Length: 102
Image (tube, rainbow, N blue to C red; front, side):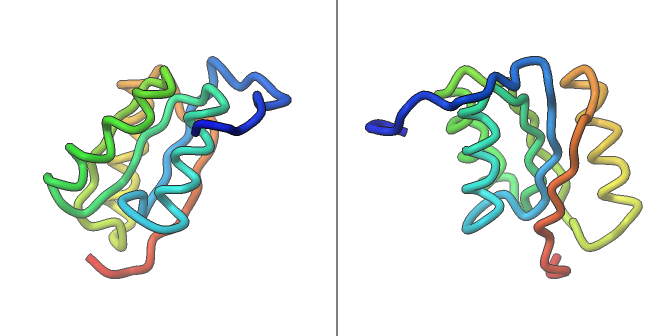
């Protein structure tokens, strides 16, 4: 984000899964994590949103993975975490911002 000071910590090498990441708090948190150097896996509902959201963390140099249509289902979210871990080399944190809407 232009105009912001450099972050005080370096989180390169860590990864996080963020549910509900296509807008609002989830999207903002995904961007904060990316700016801190965290590889981000974003759980978003639509293919269009997944394509759009992938580009923002990449602008910060962060690795990104996007998937997960129905974040309200535990099995789907568990699959997202497994896919994120396989793609990003692990999953160190989970930011559950899912609303329960499909």
